[in-house]
Image (spheres, one colour):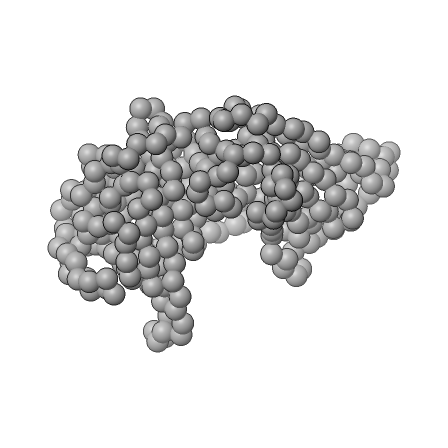
Length: 328
């Protein structure tokens, strides 16, 4: 078991791991960092190593272990993953051979929201074979995290900590009619300095968290796993203008940047949503198919509308978001 200092900031990155043996197989549970802040990703991996002199078999797959995170008082903070049938395979393991049984990633903003109450937390891994492994993590404020109430001025995206957008999420059937709806939100939960530039963490209740900033030519997204900033929404721009954007994709061996062409469909589109009527920039991202070996990943086409108060409407595949309210 690995412990962490309970100080006001986080030092690192460091790697923590713990292991135990069952039936001549050494199971090791590890995280990429044991000191985590709101901008970090909790990455956990379970591996198996055959210590015997004969070939054995192990289970590999999504359901090979479940995890839970509790605070020092034993209160449950989060757990996962959701158990799904038929996502486990049996594979042979030769003598002195190791294999990754499963690897999971979760954003700290998605786990905690903001702010994180600094202190010691316990991450437990329960393996399908009955083993239980535990790590101690220190969670608190990131070393690069700052508090600056001035935010960043952007003509299409007000970037300031605690700004919140609430949307009606509408689900469409394949032939068009609405078959359901609910409410989702996006909130700026923190900001940090990277290379002298402010970046804001946008946490969503329905999609992946994003690091964003505003530059002279528009809104950028940052992908920390590949250390790359990408222009997402160009501003100012001309109607019909095309430009290169991209997203982070897992190839089966590593993360990489997949690029595609964004289009500015309009610079004065009038859009009516529950919150009101706005004059918007309309951005269009095409459907993207990326192939890595035998694996093909699909990103659905996307239309996004921005006004002076930020995102107003979005359509992604068979889902539509329409702005209901903001808190600023």
